[in-house]
Image (cartoon, rainbow, N blue to C red; front, side, top):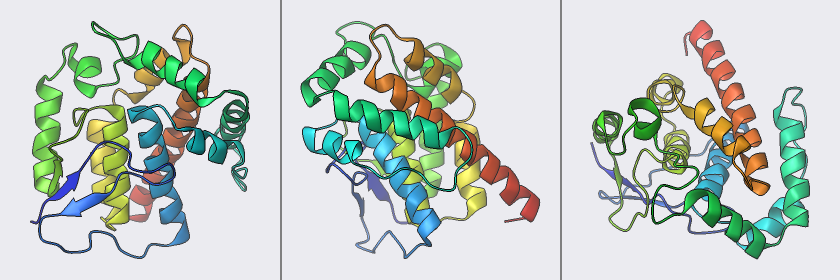
Length: 225
């Protein structure tokens, strides 16, 4: 299978990081609007988790439309993130990002699957993930700044699987094996971290989105998709 390279770092303010194919084939297909929205949402979350948002992205968030037709937690969580994006400036959010996720030692929040699942960085869950990625034909680009099991990297990979039109059962298998088992604990740590203001709301949005994804995958299972 041709290998698509996931850079695991954002390249624009509004889109997920671009994916490249060794074969030169176009890795994305024309998707229904709902699937485009899912991919873009995963891409946005990846961008916010992998690096502090630029002033342009904060401005775009601050003027973003509400989420219509959603009666669960996502719409109000999104509304609060939009409000906070309009209050905080890029420098304040960058300082918060550095305080939470960047450290010469152990950062306050270390959103890697291996750490949450086994207690150690670069442990068996990362090896298992890399095996899965090889089977999917997805690889980390050489200039990537984060490991494949970083939560932002995993969101980016989900965006790629959706954009490529991979079957829902394949998306669910990846989600269940590499995200579902630890993401809620990580998001709880993010919400409760000292000094979390902007990322408190990022965590709430991602928590609500993950809940919707679980429900959608369960419905897909029942429908035999």
